[in-house]
Length: 511
Image (tube, one colour):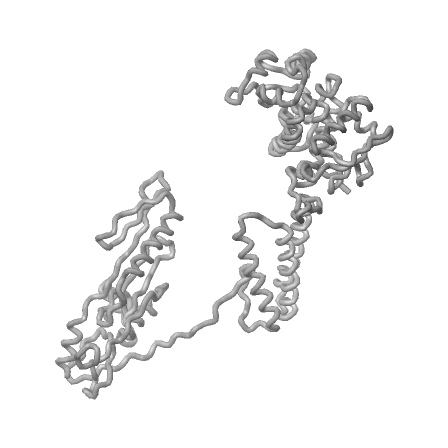
């Protein structure tokens, strides 16, 4: 029987193992290369470490799927590498008792903490459990004497199955002790919300279910391609209530602090949503998203309109519109770039003459002539300067917004004056200037004037320099272009409401 046992152990084959590595291609490059110890695998190169790790893991998984099941008679691959558990019992590695492999053969996966290499190997389940970070990918089935056609390894010759693995050859006449069973304690899966583990024994059960559902909803929200601030505010409010209850149950003060943070986040998100939408929806019940999204941007847009109304060097609506657009282009530093198309799109009767008048009075400075400006194209714009807007060391400019705000305001004004229906109707410069003014003088729902009470006529003519008779013509043009509805112009004020299609271009007045 001893000879049979020795013959059986001699027939064991070394365990398989292969390694997938991730290395840098070279200095000065973010590219990485993936190499595999299996000779049939070609080297791969990927542009970044993130893509490299994903590719290496996918390569290893492909091997694991294609690899045959772990072989019951395989010899531990980790012993061939001289791992700590298999080192001889001498020197500083002396153990209290000799290491003995045991359990079925498994296919284990080990990786380093930095994610630079991944190794799969055949070893016994006891060695896999003793290897830090090892995860079992597959387990072999122990062969029975009926399927192998050979007697099983026995200690006494009575047919009792002996151990599948052992680092020590069975001595003649010496029984081989069976390995102690490896018990696996299954822990309940950890469920988290806001990086906090929800205890599996948390009571009441309804609270635990609410926390689990909230965690799932927050993770699902993070996967959305578009934000929904109203939904996010609702989730934060639910989280605040749930964490408050959790704090009451557990007595943990940090949970109450998290609840207060969630309340603050809900309020801030709700306010941001109201600022973006004005608290209204369109006919389909969808929130209105404005081009300028927050109240400070709306105030800055009105500040430019007020400044131009008080500092325009030339009379008339055409000059006022041109000065407004040039001011928006140069508001931060007093300088900017312009092309001919920017002027021809304003609906001016004679843009070249207006530019010459602005340069003649010193309000505008050009490196060439007005004709050169009109002929300039996007690939070769003309630099312009408005001296009154250039900030000096002892005197700041007239506007308080920064360089990132300026293009937003300029883009908003350009969007209004280049509205498709205004262009199709060949609206005059005065009509476009009135459209800009009305867009900045409505409430959240688009009704004209502070609180929806209309705009005083003297204030309106200060922003749009025309008489009351011509103003009625401009109002009719905006009504025909689907900008204005229910308009009524009296000797005292203009009332009405902007149409739904232009609500995204409005800058609501503060309540």
